[in-house]
Length: 226
View: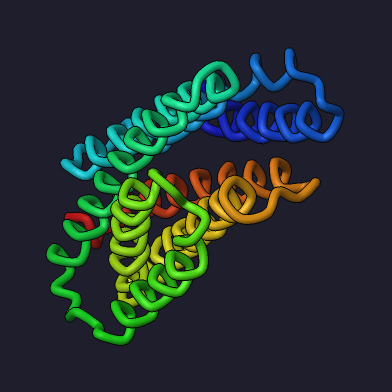
């Protein structure tokens, strides 16, 4: 099918899921959430099916483990162990995204920027110091996850140096939205729950994945990837 179909289908399902959260309609949430990432995978493959690139496997692995995280977090109400399992799955997703971004950095001979490192790690340290008194036994899993998330975001920031500016900015904005989504999730779970947390988390998460996939697709199809 055409890429436009998968794009529209993803947006429709994302809106349906957010509506389900807002209306507290659990059936709608249960049906829509597991569909989000498979639709995005189909969109990614439809945009890159004519291009052979080793980067595709890293994006697909990141999306696969994101889907795993989505599904596992659906069962948190039954047992808190599913939160930890979901955290591990998303940790792997961030690792694979980071590996993809690092390959792009090396391929385009982009110099490391210490400011990006300070900015990313500085934010992670600030957030973790704020949340640490409330984390309990989840302290080290959250610290490890936050560090990997910061590393992924740091790698993405370097892509502003790409010749294909749109591809770089899509990925950066997607990574930023991922940081926002995970930060809101952590604040809501460990510090102070708030009413619209679920909606904010899913809007930023869904758009984060979409922007990263869009940016990666544009880069893979560009001459910079040759």
